[in-house]
Image (cartoon, rainbow, N blue to C red):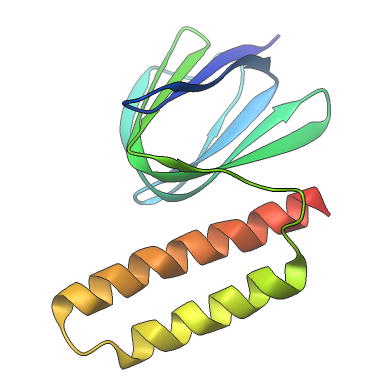
Length: 134
């Protein structure tokens, strides 16, 4: 069996596909979706959406959003997505995580910490995506 997945932003359709499995970045942890999943509406965090199609994982970096799961249909509405390139290397992604971690540690106020935390989440998602792509 399979699930239908659509990933949307306010401006465009990112993907619409049939998949075997999906893993989403929920606010309280990862949400794994297989055929027959119970109905669910949940908020999504900045992080990596992983879609498994024919034994191959496809990563998409989400910048927050919501997901509705109902009758083997998964609809993700993201605030934005980050395009992935095949040139994304593990070394660069690892350095970006280290830099973002340092920025979070030296942030001086609430807004700076929040901005640094979002950048750290994106950097970690890029690192996971680089692992999928390598």
